[in-house]
Length: 277
Ligand SMILES: [Zn+2]
Image 1: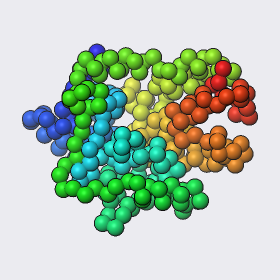
Image 2 (image 1 turned 45 degrees about the horizontal axis):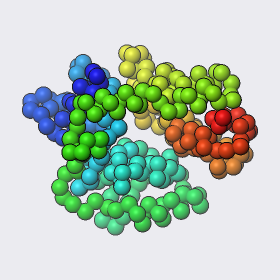
Image 3 (image 1 turned 90 degrees about the horizontal axis):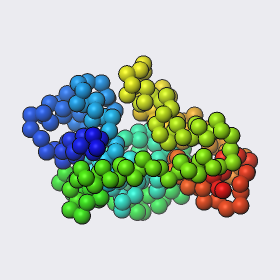
């Protein structure tokens, strides 16, 4: 319930609904960036608490893009209620700036991103689709946020609490424990699902050393980054794709678990990570 109550403050910051306290936070910590794009978690206790739980609001968050200045292109849910990074995983994986804003990526004549390397055939295909289906922001008004878990679109502590309780019983945990794979791998996946791995963001939450960013890519070091979107991980997935086929490639944890969990008749394949019973 504490998290649900704190999310109320996150919601107010997202709406810009605050007085002097919000002006202080915006000036000292946000410095022109949207809250969800801020990774700097040092500071006074209130700000640290906000940083610790702010991503939980994504459970119901929806962005309606106006000028695109408050919405992260790849990470925020703004395109037909779907994350752009999941719709275009190959492009997202090689984009230099995962937190780029819609407004920063939109030029008059089309989308513009800095990619780490030139496109292969699959990325060319994704790029063609992206140009076709992702609309450029065409308004001068600010972006809007709404909360899809309530009929009114307004944040509700009660509904947030109920949603968080449901998430705690992660649907993947049971299949993971029953899957035919080594115990140490099960424990690793469990730790990953429950944020128990010593990743940069988790270490910093517990006041450990480091600045919470990946030393290679300089973005927040979270589980999906080190396993899927990091340059080093991408190289490894290239080997997987080449050696075992593109159907075994995954772009994030949910993608990975869904693919593996829904495959039928492959209890033990080369990867030995199947979750099918
Ligand atoms: Zn990295």
